Every structure is written in C-alpha cells, then in structure tokens.
Length: 264
Length: 319
Image 1 (cartoon, chains in turn cyan, purple):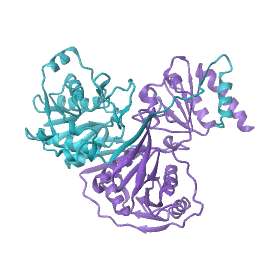
Image 2 (cartoon, chains in turn yellow, blue):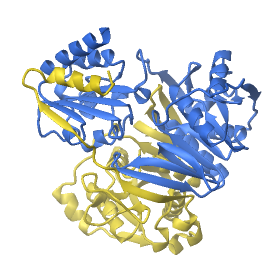
Image 3 (tube, each protein chain N blue to C red):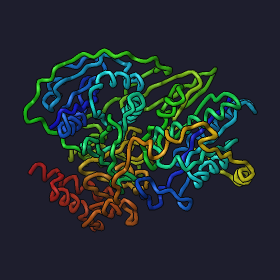
Image 4 (spheres, rainbow over the protein chains, first blue to last red):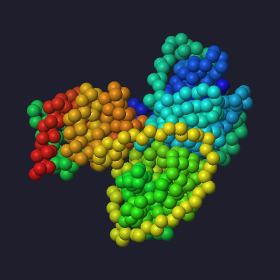
C-alpha cells in the first residue's frame, strides 16, 4: 500500500510572520515544515511500521516555491521513503481549491506506480489555520474523508478513526482509499536522529512541474483564486499595559482593574 | 438594506440555538435580507420566534436528522436551502468549515473562515480577519458571485431587529448525496453548566501554574460569569478535559475578557486567545511571555492573588 502525506512549508511560528503583496511571506531562513504535519508523517510511519516489511511505502508531497523543498526534506529526515515537490511559478497565490487541485494531480501521478490507499494530512497549517485543505483534497480525489482523527486504525481495507468534536465523540469508518486528517492528539511525533538525517541526505526529491502532472496553469495561482487579500496590516501593540508585582495586594489591584474597566 | 439574500446556518444543540447564530443574523441584517437555515429535527416554535426576533424572515428547514453530521450531506442540504443567497454565513467550527468547503466546491463560491466581520463593497463581499495569532489584520475580497463566510463567535454584538419578523417556516427537500463514510458511534460530550467556552464573554483559564487544582480558577470564572479554559499543558496532564483547551488546535476564543492564570503564554496558546478584548495575566514568572500581551499583569502566586481578587469582586457584586 502507498501512503501519501501532504506537508506544507510555513513560516516558523516563532518568527515575525508577515504578508507580502497579499500572500504569506515565505523565505528559506525562517520557514519550516508545518508543525501539525509532523503528526501526519508520524501516523503514516506508524502505520507502515505496523505492517510486514515492504508492504507499505510512504510518500511526502509538498507544493510551493523552491524553498518549500525544506518541508519534504524534513519528512525524509523523519523517515518517509519518497519525497515529491511540485514546484511551478504558476502555483503562487493559489487558494485552497487551487492547492487541492495540484495535490490531487500529484497523488494521481504517484498512483501511476501503484494504488494509493491513504492520504494523510495534518489538521491545519499553523499559518492560515483554515483546516479546509483536507476536505478540498478528498473532494478533488473523490475519496472518503475521515477528518480530525485523534486515533487511526486500518484493517481489512477499512480505516477507522475517532473524532472529538466539541459536542460529541464520533467513530467514523470508510473503505480505502481514504483521506485522513490527524490532530495533534493522534500521536507524539518522533525526532529525526543522526542516522535518519544522514540517510535523508542521499534520498532524492522528485521535482514536478504543473505540466508534469497535467494541471492547467489557468486553474491555479492568484488569477484563479476565489479570494484576494486586499489589505494586510500588523495589529498595533496593546497600549497602556500595566504589570504589578504582588506585594500583598496584587489580587485587590486585579479586581480594581476589572471594576474600573467595567468588566466585573 | 438591500434585497441581497443572506442565508444563516443555525447552530443548535438539542433545539437550543447557540448565541453566535444571533450574532450572525445581526451581521446578516447589515448586509441584506436574512433567512435562517435549520438542519436536523423540526425546530420548536420558540426557536422560530427567536430567529424572527433577530430578523430572519424565513426559517428554511431541512429535516435530515443525524445525516446533518456528514459534512458533504449537510453541504448538499445547505445548497438546496440557500440557492438564492449571494452570501451564506455559518458560525466557524471545525464541522462548519468542512461544510463550507464542500459547498464552495459544489457552487463555485469563494470562502473565508474564522472571520471577524463582513460587508458588501461594490457588489463583492469583503471579510475582516485577524491572523497569525491575532498579530495581523487582514481584509479579503471574495471574487466569486457566491460567498461563504464562517464567522467567529463574539465578533458581532447580537442585537434584535428593530421590527421583529414573524419568520415563516419553509420545508426544503434536498437530494442528498451518497456518502462513503459511516458514522458508527456518536457519544455526546456532557455539557457543563453555563456558557460554552467558544461563546463566552469572559474566559478564565488555568495552566501549569494551577498544579492541577482548578478550584480558584473555577471560583473566579463563577464570580465573573465566565467559562473555564485551559492550556495544552493542563489538558495533556489530564487535569481538565480536552474540550477546555484554548489554543490554535483547541478552541479559539475572542471574549471581552480573558484571564490567564498560571499560563506562560506559549505561541500556540496565544494564537487561540490573542484577539480577546482585555487580557489579564497572573503568573509567578515575571518573564512569562503572556505578560507581553496582557493589558494587566500580576506577578505573583495564584494562591495569594486569586483568593484576594475573588473576595474583592464578590464584595463589588454585592455592592
């Protein structure tokens, strides 16, 4: 079985994130693989490791400019078998539907080597946090969607997940092929060790253009996007902030502050 | 006020309408003519009346029961009920974002989620959001003729319409798609007393600094009529259930007041609460990052500061 994991190149959470011309600024210096995608990679690797040797192969795919290759390199360091980077200028500025179209075409490209049983994604990307990509990708691939999995089990060609929604915990099943998005509750991602980092260096990354995967340039990118960021400005810092050290009346000060602000 | 039809998907649980629905109806009224879309079992009469008070002229009902739990099914139902709407508003939740995504694919609509507001400019819907853990303000235009916007709770103040409408109940029959997923078990999460965390106007949250004892956090929440939240540390420790987790992968909250008790303020946590109106922090560590975004901070021990604050607030309430 082939398992495909989608990974996204995002600005590091600890860096100064910003916008340039209506899109998220992404540079190699402070970019990294989306942290929540580590859970997706881990889920794929655990599934592979639970099967007899040689029965499953894990592919990591990313979409983005030249710098985005860092995301699949990180996945290689964690232990995936193959890395695919769809890199094409025409992709820049794509919305979630354009991105899903590109990812779906890349999955179909991998399917030329043999069937893909599972596509695993993170629950959200920590830059946009929309959580829409898993649903859009499942729709593009026309396969079952099992989203927000906090557990995942695969047996006899059926995937079973538990999904913790605010009002209820659901158990959902679907026949493979299926797309599964995993939450950060699903597992504890491994750290790359020295051996894996060295091994990852010699693993190739397959770079594909839109033409390679048969995607029409007019259907992706900023021109095809159904949304356009027209203004972006940093939030001004909070003004008149107060900090007191408790010397016996800190609680009283706190209460007074709330009362003065009309919050109590 | 225009003739633009704005459909609002009603969030309800056990027939009780969630407060953000009224906020969405208020927002809908500022853009066009609101119609409410109700999925599940038939709505009770008082729910229909309440939707009318907030300006819904129609309540379009899809009696599809539990099938509404399937995002693709719910999307098809919503498409059938909101075919004449230029804008569809939903309350932003994980489930509604999935419904919105399917609906956008089915209808070529543009979609923005986690919105703080929306308006119509030159015939196009424009949406306000705060992103990157509320450190940036963004305005996005939806280029498509049909727009779907998922709005965060507490971003519009819910106000009844000047003239309440008597909402007409319209039954909608939708052709529902086959689904590949089977929901085999649904175990309801017991709801705590009071306002749900995501909708609360006041949130009092406890983290590592509570050492697992939420007594003072709950008391402070109680005196402020707020909901109880927690940091990832606290839910990972099992001190409090996962439903209480505030953060980028938990609940995103935008209350008027957020009180962080013994929470250091890791970037994941801040991403889920930084858009709050007023932020107050109590922490023993003067260098805790939470103080960087707190309007009022107290460096001190929770066990000293909170009881004193609770007593003073109680005394104020009793006036």
